[in-house]
Image 1 (cartoon, rainbow, N blue to C red):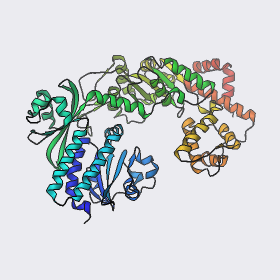
Image 2: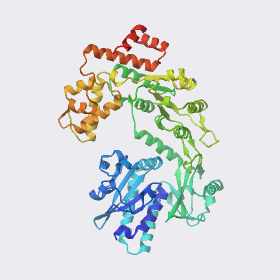
Image 3: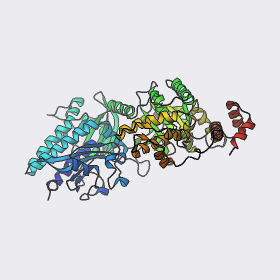
Image 4: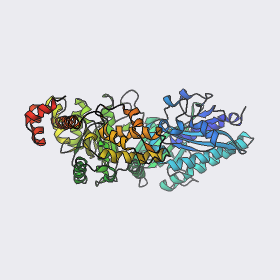
Length: 577
């Protein structure tokens, strides 16, 4: 029997207590990758082995710790035998060492968005937390007597709990207070030599709320001793049996600040980050900068891959709301039966599979920030009514709730469809369309941006040179000509992927046309004459303008007027082969 297996019950006890405090799942494997202790569900049963070449495996091989923000896309995990079925959103692995040897690995993993946000926002704390936990395990291993191990672990655990910037109250199954940490003592003025009853500490109202919940889930925000807290009750389970409860008191104001700061740091985009010098792009950039500091609704129009969310983030970061939350939601990527709960949130028990504590929606989370509604044209008609009402009344109701919640996010929406045509065909509500389309901003497709293709290609080359540790100096002349001729139906997103592919596989000092052709194939435009290329370009410009304005006769007349041609010329150029 290996060392960790001999103390697996103690390890299970420790990580379950840790899980109750942090709400992040913890798994311990030995040097043979066998799972010794875990808080993860039955899908990853104890005794089963962690995947070969996973982060756990490489941690054992190298003796290094790893923090993976997106395991499925991290090069470290590309060889993992379970990468296709990986469900881990964030992973932190630290080797367990004893007597100079690596005897296992402890990993903290996030399997849902809430745990992911928690790990990312508190990265350094969790790394220190897990390092100390490794130290606890090593100490437990070194002790021969079980009682001494448990006493030492309890002492270490309280040291860790006292280092947290959250209040901890530990109670038994009779709701008697067993222990509190320094944070709770200071914020609630607790005299540790004479700890009050729980109902007195929390107030009778909060205590009764938790009684009704069976001391599981969240209550708050509530004001206790002049501080607003969100309180989470997490059961301590030992071998499936509840042995007490940990109450975690989080400072509500600091929680809001952390969410806002994380949202800002996650992807801070400014107009300086929008690369390109074509006149069409510069016009869109000027318009966006002009309206950024107002609260006016903006509708960004453009094909898929033209950078609509990048523009939305840049507008937010130039606005007076830049210190508030920016949140994006793709209206076409969420099932129709879930879109309302995503936007407005839900109360506990609202539907099968709902979180037992309920969940706030995007409107509530960024009530004073910016909400980016991507692919707004895909929003179901039933939800268009509710969205319009929320924007008009500046309040929402959670699914299953009856208490109005005041919200006032700035709305930036985007679509690749012609909403005007959808309104005419009764596929989109006109009242919502006029509310969203206060300031339309048209983003040009890449094929209309001329030399921007080369500017962007060089930008992406520099980026992926750094990512893949390569030193490619540029593009051959033939490669640049190919890039200029290609139409890029996927726009900037397609170009970025193309350059990444070329950087990975190019073996010379400059990216050549051959590597590009492997990815995009031979372009049908490569053998066309200048006259034929001009006709194709004109047809593309006219088609895009019609897509923006609508496909009816009046819209086509307006497109012809804007382009300075007659309606007859417009039809003739559209019919060209």
